[in-house]
Amino acid sequence: MIVRPVQITDLPALLMLARQAGPELTSLQASEERVTHRVRWAQRTFAEQVDRADADYLFVLEDDEQQILGVSALTGGIGMREPWYNYRVGLTVSSSPGLGIQRQIPTLFPNNEMTGQSEISSLYLRPDQRHGTNGRLLALGRLLFVAEFAHLFGDKLIAELRGCADEHGCSPFWDSLGRHFFKMDFKHADHLSGLGNKSFIAELMPRQPLYTCLLTEQAQAVIGKVHPDNAATLKILTDEGFTHQGYIDIFDAGPVIEAPLSAIRTVRDSQALLLAVGSVDEHSPHWLIHNRRLENCRITTAPGRLAGNSLMVDRQTAKRLQLQPGDSVRAVPLLNQRQRAVAA
Image (tube, rainbow, N blue to C red):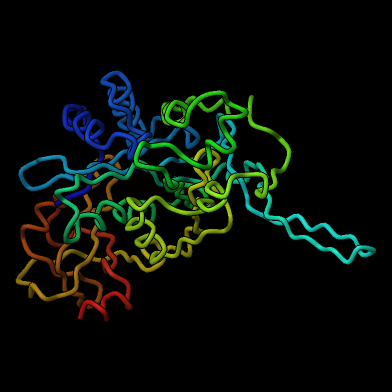
C-alpha cells in the first residue's frame, strides 16, 4: 500500500468512492465536473502553483495492483478567502446576590479564530479495507507529509469531525438551531458547505452568543460528540496529540480538534534517515516512511530496523517508495510507545 498525490487517471475510482461514501464524505461530491476540478487543482497544489490560501493536497491510498482504496486531504490555510466559522463552547455567568442565585449557562460563541490554520479532511477508506494498518497509513501519511513540508502549512492542524445524526441523516443540533436561520434542511446546508459555498453562513448566521439551554435536549446532548463512524479517526488523532478545546461545527456540533504542529507525534518524532535495503524480520516495528518528495510523494508503512542513521527495509518497500539504497527518507514508528507496548 502507498499514499500518493491524486492523478487525473484516478477520476473513475474517486467518483466510485464518493458515491459509496455518500454523506460520510461531504467534501468530495459525486459529481464528475467537481471531482475533475478538484483533482486538477490538487495537481497544481503539489506543483506549488497556488497560494497557501488555495492549497488543496488530495491523496489516495493505492494497493500494489493500483486499485484506489481510499482518499484523504490537507488544506493549506482555511478562512483566508472566505470566512470560516465555528462555535466555541463557553460559559455565561449570571448572578443575583439579593436572591442568592448564580447560574453558569453553557453558551455558543460564533467565531473565526481558526483563520489561517491548516485542516486535515476528506478521509474515507473503503469499508472492506478497514483492517490492518490501512486506516492508520491513510490518516497519518498526510501528517508525515506535513512534517517534511511544514513551511507550507499553518502553526496548527485542525480536523472538523462529523457530528451525530440519526439514521435518516438528520442532525438534532441543526434542527434545533440552524434551520431557523438558514431555512433549509441539514442535508442541503451540508451539501452547499461541502461544495465550498460557505458565504451563506456569514450572511445568515446570528452574530450573538447563543444559550444552549434554549436548544432541545437532543441538540444539547450531541454538542461536541463525534459520529460513531468517525470514532476510530478521533482515536487515531487523539493518540497523535490532537485535543478538543471547545470548538464545534456550526452545522452538526461535531468536535473541531486541533494540535500545534510541534505537538503532533508524527511530526515531532519523525526523522530524516538513509534508506537501506536488506532482510527484515517481519516482527520488526512498523514504520511510516516518506520519500521526501513533494509532487512525486510516496508514503508507505512497512517493518523496518533502525541502525544508526539508516532504516533497513525490504526491497518491495523501496520499490513502493521509488527509491534506491542510500536515498533519504523521513520516517517515524507507526505506533507510539504505549501502542507498541500494548501490541507486544
